[in-house]
Image 1 (cartoon, helix red, strand yellow):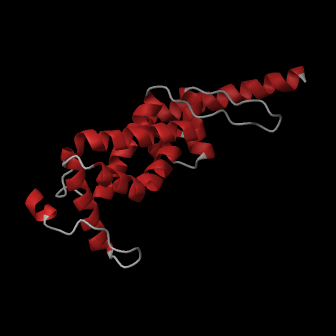
Image 2 (image 1 turned 90 degrees about the vertical axis):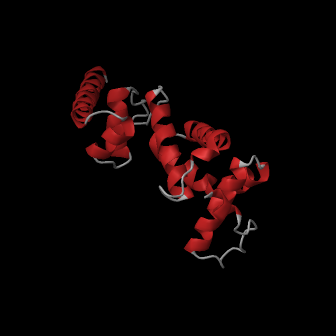
Image 3 (image 1 turned 90 degrees about the horizontal axis):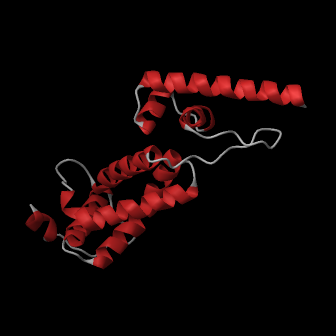
Length: 180
């Protein structure tokens, strides 16, 4: 199988002239070259996919620093384990974005927290698992099913965490109003 892919031309097609099949073939060629240890192929793959990888990581992690760490981790994983790519299972783009999703979710699970958001009186909204579920649902517009997938927890846990976060925020607002 690598012989078939290695036989393809390894020079990129000028921008705008390659069709989807040519793009996929170019991506596969880059993966063959990365597997062979060619640093310039990794650089080319990075140039082609960094923006998409960062965008997905940013949506999952919620802030720039964590997303940048995920991008670095993803491309380091590509460099170390390029041989794990199997074109029979999907495209390079699909493989990279799946790897990105898994890496970003792992980062969230390890405790990378979303930045606090500001309410109308400039007080910080607290962070934590309950508030992360709430932020993903309300600020980022994810459904509870999507939040469950992002956080890697059961749907019932997301519902419980969301309810607990709403109750906590309600109590904080009540205390603010009483003291103000």
